[in-house]
Image (cartoon, rainbow, N blue to C red):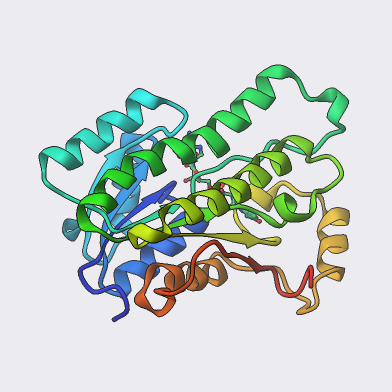
Amino acid sequence: MLLKDKCVLITGANRGIGLAISLLFEREGAILVLGVRSEESIELLKSQMQFPEKHIYLEMDIANKESVDAAFKILTERKIYCEVLVNNAGIMLPPKTFNLFNEEEYIKTYEINVLGSMRVAKNVMKHFLRLRKGSIINLTSILGTHGAVGQAVYSSSKSAIIGFTKSLSKEFAPLNIRVNAIAPGFIQTDMTAGIDEVSREKNLSSIGMKRLGTPEDVANTALYFASNLSEYVTGQIIGVDGGMVI
Ligand SMILES: NC(=O)c1ccc[n+]([C@@H]2O[C@H](COP(=O)([O-])OP(=O)(O)OC[C@H]3O[C@@H](n4cnc5c(N)ncnc54)[C@H](OP(=O)(O)O)[C@@H]3O)[C@@H](O)[C@H]2O)c1
């Protein structure tokens, strides 16, 4: 088992890529701290875990500083220290031309995708400094590395995560804290479910491997970054996109 008894915090653990990572990491022996937005999500998530009682479930809305701080306070009170963070939670608004996005939409996207990831990372650093080790796995996107028509707001939020990843990795490498990011291509989750058939076909034709990605494809890369297999790897942005960009 690659993660035996490692404590791993995963945000947005209840569905999509976050759920696939949670299920894989559980199979690899991790003790999970699963961050979700609601009590209902906790119940649903528990019903999907193989050993639900082994893990900790926290209500954590990453758009809200108080909510994140309160979740970490619970961990501190219980003396639970995580050595891996998967900064997975994120949103993507439906695509449209930049001129039609309004201020509220920019703020919502950045509040979750950028500030939310920073809030959780800042809190978990205290755990890492105590343990003298740690690994952060940020979720960026192929849209963050390459941009896309209709996605100026989301793609720029994901580009910010690349800068965040690289700067944090430089700053914390001397302290044995690694920071990497995964840049998925087109992965089949609720986030991409609303994409129309024409765009889906267009995307598919640009994928060298001629299939859409699965949440498990992303989870397997997250496992590498969470495990000691990558103990000398930091500051990297790894595409998981079936050859969409090479
Ligand atoms: N799917 C893709 O093709 C793709 C490609 C590139 C990058 N990504 C990135 O991969 C990550 C996961 O995407 P996904 O496809 O799995 O998305 P998804 O199926 O839409 O799931 C998003 C997850 O994020 C959670 N979340 C959203 N806002 C939150 C908040 N304020 N606080 C806490 N949790 C919040 C959701 O919780 P609720 O259930 O409560 O809403 C849900 O668990 C995201 O960062 C996304 O940008 C995805």
